[in-house]
Image 1: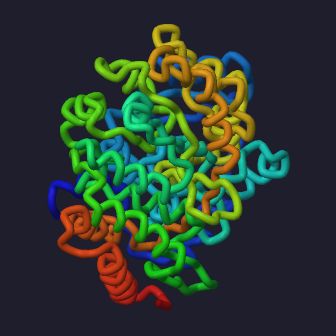
Image 2: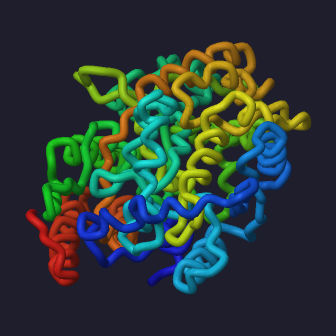
Length: 444
């Protein structure tokens, strides 16, 4: 495995069908009732300054259940620690910040089935609809939804204006803008050679998925109309030399390049805005938030609503599933919990990605100087992105290995060694063959 895979891959290795394991950790995992308050151990590698206040607020407002926050070093360390305790069956925590795709982790047998405990909150519609698919596998729930961060675009408006180019509303218009900008030595977007997320996001935005589940079988289709529509956008950007290929592996150099005015359109989300505000020097105030460009002829405004690490997972062997779900739902759907994440130095809250209406907290995600006079536009752009979010993406039982293969293919795509369609055809063959080798029923 090359070094490029390590940065992006989920920490799962799935070799089993989710359907076969859909019953793992059912109601038998609800745990026993304690005579006093139940303590739910919560593992997270997020900064304690945002997580500890949430635990403290929960403990101050609940008598029967208490949260004990246990700080983890990082994503990879958490994954290994969870695997170790689940294997041993001892000292299993009941809530863990997710470190991979939920269906994959469920397929490994690492997660408790929380469907029954989650049902009362689903009936109350405590979560935004787009937050639910990512925590399901085989029709069952294996994590408390934490939701997604909304996707939109920011453009360096000063450069667009300098050359009389309008903000793009569709991907076709963005490509047209790129052709005009190219004449002035400016790239319209950046496609890093190690990160195929642009293609994945475009397939999701087209309401596509490379996997579908049909009973006890998987259907694989990398060459669906939605996938080919996404491929066409990427291919035209590459063929016309409209994109830069700055790597994400050198973050300071990347940010400096974004700041230079040589690349002027960034698909982004709320969590990245503060970094731009902090690090941009030349272009601070020149950027404008705009809606994520749409496919021409799209019937409805759509943004990708799938999150790789969505869900607060409940590991297999948790002794108090019901109480863990109660605590997890509170942390991700209540005003008290979101308000507890407020940081005075940044004047921001953690993004409430699972809540149907995040509008009370949107203003805090928008930096003071990044957008200059266009700052007030950001609130509407973000809320429109939330409202338009859809998650039609299904994660197959071998997606970890497939994504690694996609990364290798993507590097060839951006360097024009192969076409996007050729890469998708290869991935179709690779995925079907790999599933068959694992004795998983597959059509494709």
